[in-house]
Image (tube, rainbow, N blue to C red):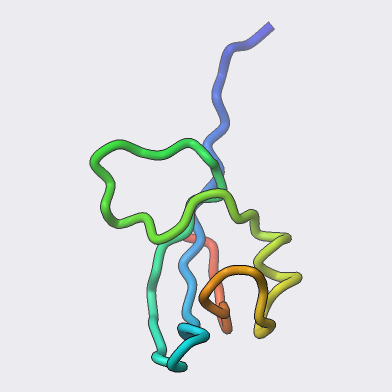
Length: 73
């Protein structure tokens, strides 16, 4: 039995803010809900690739819309 932890890759997203349509690029999303201490580079936690793909280009309960994404290798 292994105790290896598999880290999910981060996802880099482009999109816009719903309220004023201001675009953003290169924001980092962690697929994990585990907050990484001292990492101000993470824009959002807990969205998986499948959730992002399903909501691509659509308004959701969040205050932003993702228009493009790629897996950060």
